[in-house]
Length: 155
Image (cartoon, rainbow, N blue to C red; front, side, top):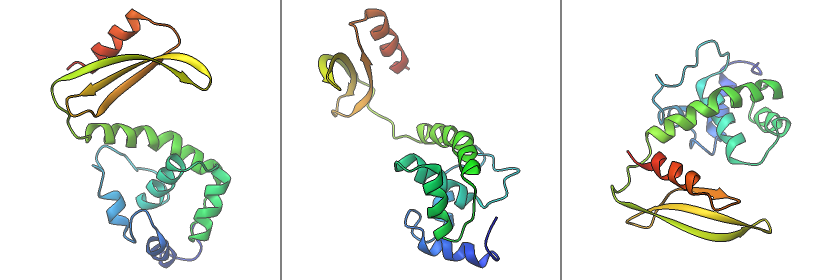
């Protein structure tokens, strides 16, 4: 699991660029009652750091295993896979719940754009400040899908 003792974890925290050297900075961002860490054998900060690193950067599980080993945390790539599968939806749901509220008024744009060499329809919901709330790409102009998209955004 860990090389040596908990002292190695403190060196991991000191070299952690994401949380600026403190595990509480990383775990303190989330409501810990929403993310259940029961039964895991690693500290919350290590798990969250690994999941954030995998989701944010295009690395494989084996590369992430090596990166964590350089920081003093020995973990298998299969365990990293289980962490990403288990905790990334929970982190995403927690982040969506904490997302900044937008203006009450919004409008929907429809345009035709080229994506990867193919023409597709882009439906985009924009608030009054010009911030994109959500978007939908469709191969065909589909009125029913556009209505479902707009209903999904309505409170």
